[in-house]
Image (cartoon, rainbow, N blue to C red; front, side, top):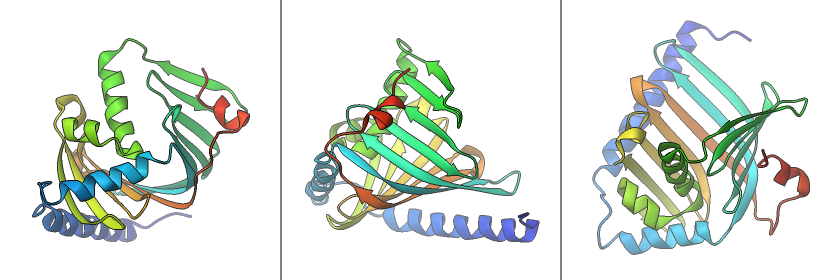
Length: 217
């Protein structure tokens, strides 16, 4: 189904308005001595669950092209293995991000591997991005200027990258949730943005052999 330019423009305005309002609100709450214990409690709750699975919906806004691209599927966040996005719509595919590689698996099972072992920049960026999903408080504090508001059961944080290689790609990251992460919003350069909404969370104690296979080269 084609989306009209009018609808796309309206969507861009809608997302920009939400982002601006969120930024204005949370910019008044830099992480400090009062909020840090709550922030650490939130991170602890997230990190206490080494494996999280569920469903995701992704909305990508390409401002210059006035395009809105949506996709959905399932996800895995594994402290040991990495991150997996298994897209079912619009086209089946899977992408795993580990400490040393990005592994894409096609519908037919063929793999394409970007092996970055020994690439210090890639490994650093992978660790930084993974820290957002894994609740690694120490890494977050070392690599982001943090703004935090809410309680341990209803919170929002904004992360501004300190690392130049990351800030060249991502201007800021909004994360919101309760006892787990419910949404992640990445504001990229050139007014582009990507929003993930997570649902149907599960917390298995181990991955199945099939799930493990997505992380292997």
